[in-house]
Image 1 (cartoon, one colour):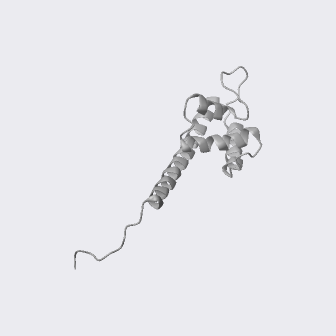
Image 2: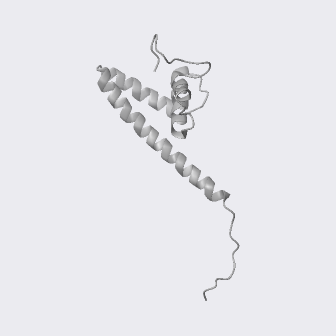
Image 3: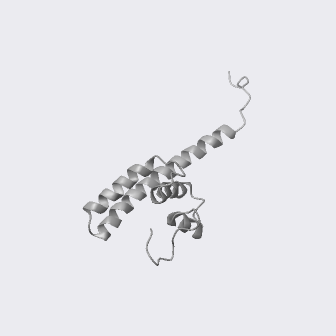
Length: 116
């Protein structure tokens, strides 16, 4: 995401991806926020978010950039990879939210059933 003279860049302690999420009002998406944390840890190398996925994703993207010299092909491959990661993280966030909602519901009192 970092390019000389580009409209978007690092802002404060945020990497470019975080800056873009904030600028476009997408930071409330749990899946995108998690990807932003991973990208931040890769880009700024400060381990701020301690994302375990960062090392693997960094290795894969670096490997792809070595074997795919065509930028369009590299973009296509990385897009599929990030789409899959987003799908996984968004699905995981939905499941976590559903679990929290179940825990918050008041328990029903157990009593005798009207049917015998």
